[in-house]
Length: 302
Ligand SMILES: Cc1cc2nc3c(=O)[nH]c(=O)nc-3n(C[C@H](O)[C@H](O)[C@H](O)COP(=O)(O)OP(=O)(O)OC[C@H]3O[C@@H](n4cnc5c(N)ncnc54)[C@H](O)[C@@H]3O)c2cc1C
Image 1 (cartoon, helix red, strand yellow):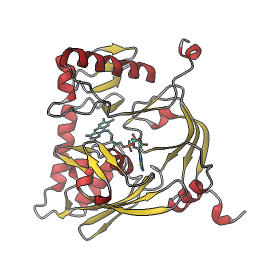
Image 2 (cartoon, helix red, strand yellow):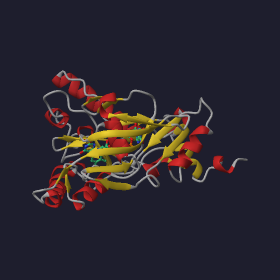
Image 3 (cartoon, helix red, strand yellow):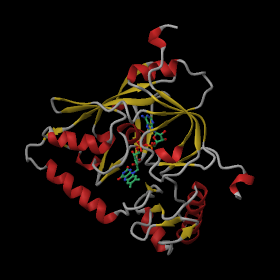
């Protein structure tokens, strides 16, 4: 076999997805691949059958994986593709690195503008896919260009203008996944970035229930109103389904407060949607991505 086509990453079979999601939920993925680096990822992709389902996960902080798991191959770049580099007022980051690390790195390098990313518990790739944002900032406001890989393992570069960007939504020009990004920041002339990071982390700890597993905000905010306010208005704070519970602190969070199944979380999501629709006339749309198969009915009962 051509040595340049030998995989160097780690392939696992029947990998439990609860190990890879912030909710700590989810059945097994048929195959789970962690590439060794970017060339290895490209080799792996070239070797996949055209019909093999490929599912990318970052740090699983916006994913509800169902109890029956995932049919296909999960690709996780969060262990290997993490390099960061400063170039003038720009930062180049591989997409498997975390948002928090990029925010801290930028501040330490004397660059301002990425502070809002601190405390978003996902990868840069996940943040690009979701147009993640906080405290008035969104990642795509900073993007100069991105590097993507397609399912044949070919790399492509795109500019920000090539994408359709809106609130928590990104339309890419082609099918593929993010492997790198160049962010445009500014010189931290006021020397306040490090202090701002601490301030934002404190604010997050005050507002969000960070002590129990969750998937962050479950629903998108409808225009002009916070989803959490609507949920609170319906008296749903603290409501439970199995071990899943609407947070008392932030009503748009559903917590794994006790041993829980993904099916309980999904049922609670449906109950919240129904109540908010009945009482407020607004259809809440999930921000979390719900993927995978439910357990077969016989197994779900035991
Ligand atoms: C406590 C908590 C607080 C949170 N606070 C915020 C917040 O303030 N703001 C906010 O926006 N979000 C927040 N989130 C949600 C989540 O952290 C973000 O959406 C984050 O960007 C998801 O990144 P991830 O790496 O975990 O992606 P995952 O959850 O692993 O994946 C999310 C989606 O992105 C896709 N994806 C992942 N990597 C790639 C890639 N490289 N290329 C293409 N697609 C990819 C996946 O297939 C999936 O569809 C919070 C979550 C938690 C648990």
